Image 1 (cartoon, one colour):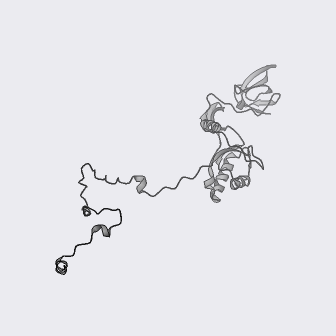
Image 2 (tube, rainbow, N blue to C red):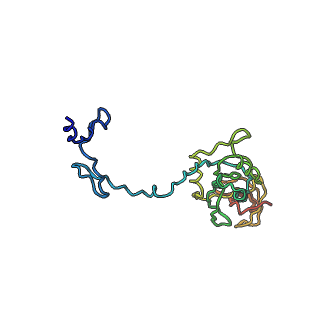
Image 3 (cartoon, rainbow, N blue to C red):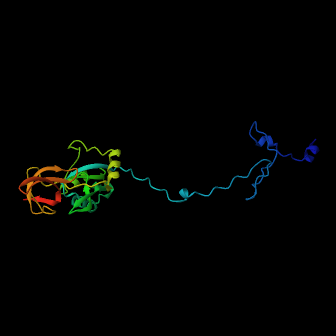
Length: 247
């Protein structure tokens, strides 16, 4: 018996003893990783698609979101006859005080009209709303203070101490921009500086030097009807506005 034990070779421990209970021994050794650049040889397997190049948006720096535009159109009352100089003063102060971010533009709505002057047709610009400016701004305390401190500027139309002014509607803005610089067909005549009953003197034409009384104003035609005394008799004569002057 001892001789048999001596001649027996030691047996390796059972693989089950080194593994956790309930697990089965692996039948194959783990395969080494495939060399880089060699795909999977498993039937039906597809190699992974190459990464797509970044688009221009992905490759560039992310853009900051554009700031919200809070500018609206408002109507501002100003001193009549000073619209141009007040517009320039406001634009100058906006730059000095660094308020460009709250300021858009100022428009003096005008239209082009043809008038008769000294017997000639003259095209000129006429203000649609004398004494008013259309301004595109973000209404806040700084803008309000700037306008109020500018000489010749009144208030924002429709506003009060406790209520902000209502902005112009989109329809009003489009209509204003559409009429800006529009040429009015026909002939517009300057408004007369006299009225019925005034004594005037004819300064041009056949009856130059004669005096008479204004009897009627034909504004649609740009004419004035003056009663002159010709050969001792009163005769009504129609003349253009510029042909007569006050006595």
